[in-house]
Length: 158
Image 1 (cartoon, one colour):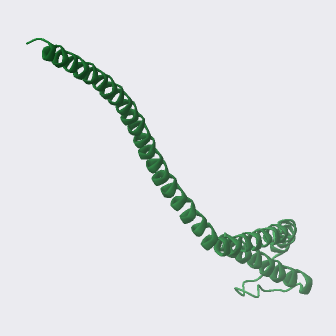
Image 2: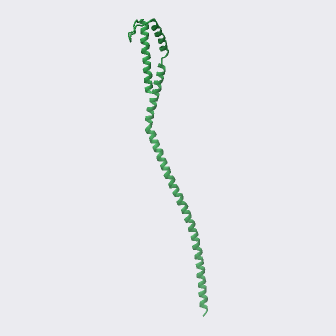
Image 3: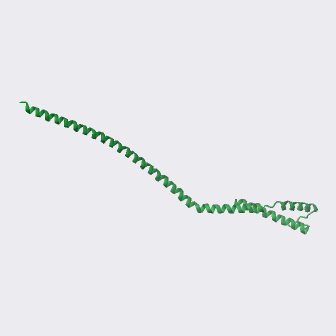
């Protein structure tokens, strides 16, 4: 945009300079061209008048001013962006760290859920084993009673 503005400004400066030279020739009714020293005819004067009219209508100073304003706005925006860049970079780094921490947190939660399921399974097995042991003890007690009964009967028989 800067190079476009420079080109447009250069073209406008050339237009204004050419307009000044042509107006000078016309207003002083020069006999010779001040640039190339060629004799000027009435036809040349008519061409100069026509060219002055064309150049007077073709001014681009509003366009140049608009472009300058736009360039100033863009430069301010660029300055603001450059100021915000470290903040944005820190934010992005923080977001990435948060994602990493969240991922690790979810992995830990998953492991804890697996451990919890394993503990419930072990508790269930302990309960089954405890019932088995209780039933086994009851049967051993019954067998002990039967053996004691048989011994007591065996003592009675000679």
